[in-house]
Image 1 (cartoon, rainbow, N blue to C red):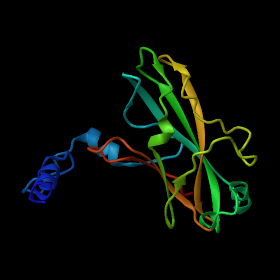
Image 2: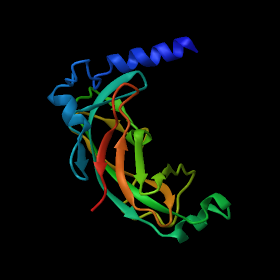
Image 3: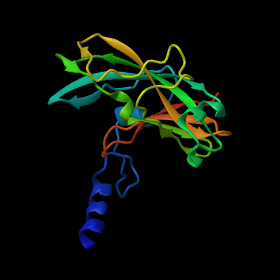
Length: 186
């Protein structure tokens, strides 16, 4: 227990956004840009590294839009009470390879989050598909071979409360960096 508390104190003191005793922020302009909330359609301020199959590639990530579904969309999921008063939203993200030698299926959507006016959304992982999927909504292809300059727009469903509004799209950058944030409010 003492080690966990001590470890948390050391991590807090050493984190890039921590302030020193004089109150001056130790973060530079790049760190400040990374914590700024972006608008949908705006690319990530820095390249993101994604590792799979022993290779690390660099990608630019741009959440483009959120399409709202209706409560009837979740009926295809069955009569499960956990879907009562819920609906789907479809999140579109453009990914561009900016530095891979050759990589396979970066799977960006696994690190994407959706925040709503009442809490966090749940990514819906499907075996098969839903008839309510928009015609332009294409999921990630884990076997697609990427080369520098290639780009792709992926789309995945998220479950939210029926009356909630999507406020933010986030991208997890690992345990030591704050997530990137895009405002989805209009």
